[in-house]
Length: 614
Image (cartoon, rainbow, N blue to C red; front, top):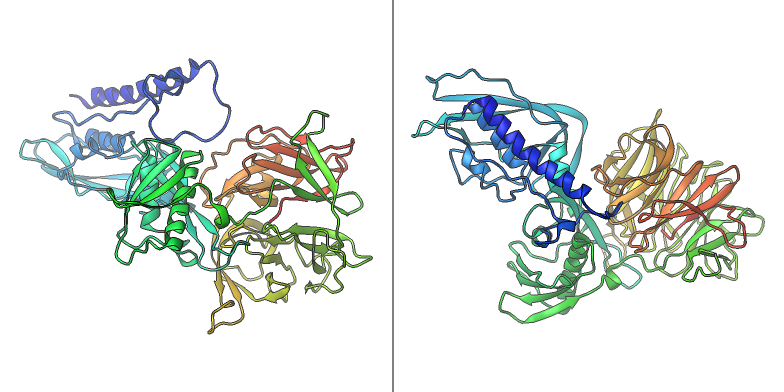
């Protein structure tokens, strides 16, 4: 078959599949405007949720190396999770990919090779621009700056005179368009090495990985990824209760009640605490993957007895508060705002004054943070940015001295609590520590590795788990959003290090392409929302901590927006924001609606600095 005919056949088949998908969507009577994509196969006969698959084409007799390489790369990007058709292009049908992926900005290019019947082996170099990569664990890394890559493919003729690819790379080469179609990010959950929630257990930490979603059972894939252990970046800060060599088999016949048959590796522990931790890890991971609540029961092997179950994160969830945010009224007094459970009177929100003496008399609150542990702790930074005070909601006695003091006006940023009760604040004083922490009212040392000389931290937001921390870093004329891993050393029962300390390590840049970032907040396990500019207009933009493209959708532009807040784990997915229009006012939206409304109760929406606990 001629090359032109073969390529036309392949592209037609792929085109038919894509056209079918478009026609299928166009034929739907209704279609959701947002929300995550469903993972896994759809039920047959349901045309509303029919998923059109891209079926790869096996090699045809007499194909030349260029056509063969086209077909092989097409097969890698198909919906076939086991690569059985791709292997037909190879001299060794036992080839297995490592799981690593190189993502290019477009399909790889390679030069045409003149047909030569006398040659029995040759090589073709595929080239492209790498924009991201997955390691063998599925962890995503943005390639900064993007770089040119060259990959050699070697060909030989077999005993039937047919060209085949010899020893192909174990890393899959794929375009960004195909990557976004067949891969999706899921969160695996692991308990933190150090730090405890208000309930006295290690908080669960999200570890985002990408898996192929066009497979028979994505839940099974996610479960095995979980028991295999955390990513290289996260591993130093979390534990894996599953010992090496652990295997898991899921029974998902009832999607709301999954059975997990575990065969633990050497050293496996079925005791009550370990079993409950494993069950909760699986529950959190599978619930996030399936996008629905999924109880999990653990069994000791396929035919073994049930050991324990989990239907909630419970004490492992570091956020132990409801959907109540706080803001400063025009008089700089703290107020609370909650979505109304009964909006029959026309008020969608309940706004109340917050009792408690949070700062000494005569001190004005400039920014604040409320603890997500549920203990009511409040940190307040004075309006001049010099002093930080600790108090509590409803506290009858005002603090008299600050727990932290900056060297000059505006030195201290707005503070941030994690779910272990640790307080964080940035200090822009050139002669001091750029990041400071407080535990139980006592400052503790913080070391930051990889921060450029002379850089300052403009804002800090720590994830509820206390393991990931988002830093708005200014270095010269450049401002970037960096995600770091928090290492906790000492304290509690550590006799070698009785005094606690922190180290922020392995900073990673995210929110690439977004400028003028002025505010940020953790929105879920691995995502944030930021206030910045992407197309010349300041707006609220969802970003992922690993730098991968966000699937959260586009949030309606809010004119004059200056800051934003969210609450990880909030089922209502509420966002609150401050905007100047021209006075500072509080607005609210939901990620399920993408529509901003003024927060009013009694006719006024004025206020600033709105924050969920955290």
